[in-house]
Image 1: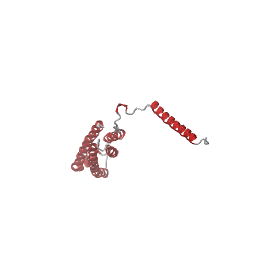
Image 2 (image 1 turned 180 degrees about the horizontal axis):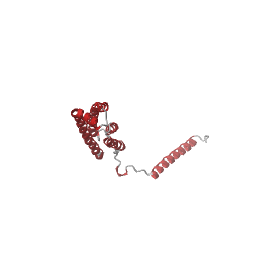
Image 3 (image 1 turned 45 degrees about the vertical axis):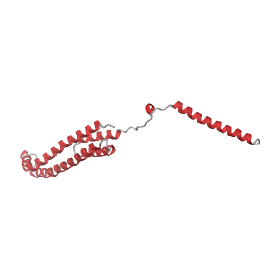
Image 4 (image 1 turned 90 degrees about the horizontal axis):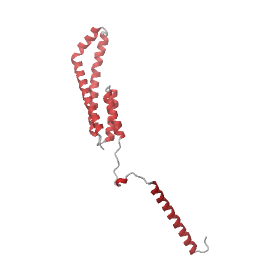
Length: 175
């Protein structure tokens, strides 16, 4: 079965996740270079006190590293799931569903929605059974089946009547 739309959508999600990974990487680099200047800029606006700006910068580092690591993991599993489409379809669908949920959790929600839609489509599609019955495959003739059942029943009744008459002929005292 061809899964062209699922493959294309999944690879689009992988590409978007690559852009998100690039954004996380640049954000982490920006934090490493411009952390102190950002803190001074926050204090200079007057909306943040020194302790609030310090807390913001302190929290920004681990959060950006967490997003960087999560995007690397999600893109690796996204590539694996995209490769498995058509080969291990159920496993790919489960993997893409989990990746989609985690992507929504890590605030990559458009990418997560794409992966969830792809996984639902993979679960929905079924392989067609190939049988060699010819052009009548899947047709059912109720009338023909009914007459066959009637014939079987009438054959049984005729056999039963023959057996009974034979028993009566063999033993005249038996009714």
